[in-house]
Length: 210
Figure: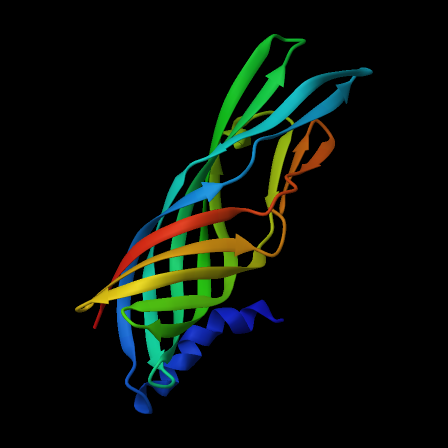
């Protein structure tokens, strides 16, 4: 699947505004990012004494825009574009030097979910694919010698959740998963490490529809 088409889809759907009663909305929310702790050991001069660990994934925030496009009386299509920011903490242990350092990393990505919604009484059930586009990152790791960092520029995920409308406001909670692994590679003193996990998060947001 061409991820550029996923990114352009919300904008292409704007052309439907002349044929359907489309609602536009602005939204903001918080996300909990979940990654299990993981550690790696490296050989240096024949000794396994350098350890690198994933410590924690913190809360993040997001804001963006959405379209709500009626398909039938109960079904709607809801594409969104949101900018997301999150923080992850790592720890590097060097027993030989008797040092242990903690590194914080914050990165930004653009999410493009395309959700199909079904109206069930007062609740909207939602599900659909999500394109994740890496934008930028800032990290304490960048200041460390012999540590390089790379990200995947794109990966595909999914979202499942529900929403409630109260007047022009929409409150939603959704689970955001990933089909691919974390997609990040560290090069530490000449040895490559992949964080072999799929990130998951719960997202709560509120939107105002026009």
